Amino acid sequence: MTPAELSQAVQAAVSAAVEAGELTVAVPEHVTVERPKNRDHGDYATNVALQLAKAAGRPPRAVAELLADRLRGITGVAKVDIAGPGFLNITLDTATAGALARTIVEAGEAYGRNRDLAGLKINLEFVSANPTGPIHIGGVRWAAVGDSLARVLRACGADVTTEYYLNDAGVQITKFAASLQAVANGHEAPEGGYVGEYIADIAKAITDAVPGVLDLPEAEQLQVFRTEGLKLMVGEIKRSMDEFGTHFDVWFSEKSLHDSGAVEQATSRLREQGHVFEQDGAVFLRTTDFGDDKDRVLIKADGDTTYFAADAAYYLSKRDRGTEVALYMLGADHHGYVNRLKAIAACAGDDMNHNIEVKIGQFVKMLRDGEEVRMSKRAGNIITIDDVVEWIGVDAARYTLARSSTDSTITLDINVLTSQTNENRVYYVQYAHSRMCAVQRNADEHGISRGAAEDFKPELLITEWESDLLGHLGEFPRVLASAGELREPHRVATYLEDLAAKYHRFYDNCRILPRGDEEVTDLTRARLWLADATRTVVANGLTLLGVTAPERM
RNA sequence: GCGCUCAUAGCUCAACGGAUAGAGCACUUGACUACGGAUCAAGAGGUUGCAGGUUCGAAUCCUGCUGAGCGCACCA
Image 1 (cartoon, helix red, strand yellow):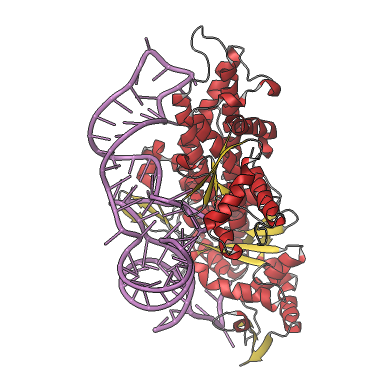
Image 2: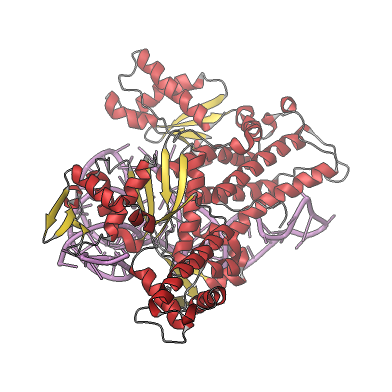
């Protein structure tokens, strides 16, 4: 029996009590059934009686009593206790609990998925770093988290488009081109320009590819460095993302918004909605109507459109392309944009609490030899995505960056991640997977198989380690669902670490395969079912994080 | 000055408003005639920054304070 099935059973018990006139409450849509931390509290616990008590006008324990009697009648439920203020602690009989292993093995890759977000079209934009330099460590965090989130959302049934917004218009690109030009001509970098080896590399690539470029007039030369430099830099970013296993369905050009007239159209569309006004010769969007600190300029007094105007056009483009929820993942230095972005949606007549979501992520701090390594795209001594991959590998990088909540800053110690890789939790999880594969290989070599489903005897999985493992396996669907609902893929990583720990304990305490000339028993086969179920869930979880599940390490 | 976010073990991080706040690292002590020891067992380590409030119940929600990061352009 899965926790979801048990939850429905508890809900049915509430309905039955209401119908029998024993309770007068609205039957809750969702009944929380969870694995208690303390095993003395049974296999599963629900706080439903505590939550219904007030509405029912009865003491929690009295409500619990009513429900307990009904729950005891359910097939597979061995024991129901009332504890503390009114918790219902439910113990399943071992066969019912163990049968979950078969359910998981048979579901395979599909185990854990749900349809909670079915039919929801989500546009997930992340990274979107300026194409004026390599992706730095902050961008790497979004690459890991964003890509995992896309996978999680899809596993919850959502229709997700991942997108990278290329800021290929504007003064920073001109500055980038000027920096390339300066280096190519052996000049000092311009004021506020970009420096670093990559500038020299790209400049050289351009002079190699366009032989006569340095003989062109100044303005034409700059144009060549602009278009060619942008092309090369974007190519580099795409390559890095590809090597990092992060896929974007759409690479969206800001310049295309300007070239197509979409920016002007956006302004007139917002004007029709009645939130545009003019003042001091400029055109404003009245974002203060929807919680912004100040109104934002769309068209400057000199007639140029602002970056904000392009943002508005971009949002509208997402919506025009069928997006129901535009999900933005921004760095902490962009938190000031949240209100104005949401105001764009509201000004466009959308629901700012549904059609747009903005997730802010905190910075990544890196330490080397106990000193903080400062990241600065302009300084040249930056930590790039390629550096991170070279030092610790894609799996460790993705896992380390995705395993923590984006709400908190994280500190990566380069010395630890480079010299003592076994401290990284990803190895712990991957090792559990490898171990299970090794058991499978050994079983295969000896001609041992878990056997047919109808011969599986789940009631033999009675030890505390087997029970613990089974219970945790049952939690996976709930964890995945909440990771999707809360947009927090790190929950999957936390879950996997717990699952790996429970597997390792099971492995150490419960011999799976027979030793020497011992017989193959029903218990052998039952444990193979359990190990296979665990391997399935670990693999499913790692896939959600974009991390490989190795058969050997 | 205004605003956003954060503050949990020595360190790095967890914890749908639930029961005794959990892991890893580091530290102490054990388990290798090994289904792969990249493992396991045990120990020690906490007034969840401070003070109030809401609740049957608060690390979690609300208010104030302290500290840290970041943001406050007719820049992009």
